Length: 299
Picture 1 (cartoon, rainbow, N blue to C red):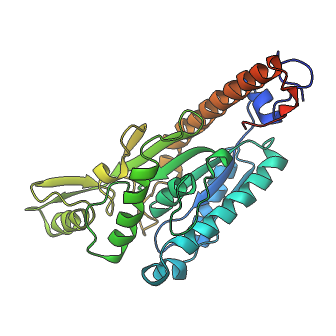
Picture 2 (cartoon, rainbow, N blue to C red):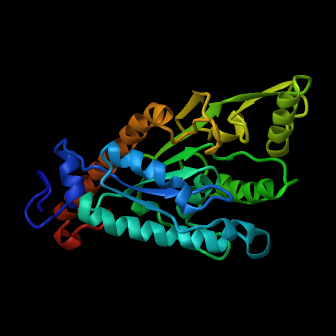
């Protein structure tokens, strides 16, 4: 398909052309699950995304046992499985989303995995540098900032977050990749509060130590200060639970999904537009220099 105004022989990908014409495709979504989860727990989220017009949703094939083996094997195998899921999502996008870069939703530790997938530097012996396949990263209750390595979950988060914050800090690949960090105020942890408040305070301190704080807000597991990523747009929900706990609505429940999904979609579309414009301008420049055989490079 010939790029708009870019001259004969120079082509834009179909998704880029459609985006520049004001009709971007609907996104293919990749869901990267959280610590100790399994793909099946995200079936309700998959159904809700489909109800909102998402044509394809891929859930990474990462299971509870994979997380339990992290202390012995490290995060490398999880990153590999997540990378394979991204390849699958990209293939499905070619069929239903004009091949557009994927919108990635990372729940909890899955948000760190999403960021690691974009790193140009090797992590756990793996260098995926897959940001070209990703149009946006949306994190739900992800521990981006971790200071305590006391328990297993904290060790997992600390190692990954330290690397990600060094190698791909904040909105590292913007504007070609969009970013959104979603957190929640469900339970206020108080050092001198009720039993439940003291328990929450201890959980939050175990992840992001702030001994001087008398009160810390969080989603029951991840404090707000940990789940927001510096330099990245953030949404703080009121009342969303970290996970799918009995009697609680979580980030992926209908009422909370509708609070962040429209913004996530908007951010993904903005990133597609930025990438399409940059690609179009690059192709035009190459053509002027006699490089009209460059095809779709740059996308």
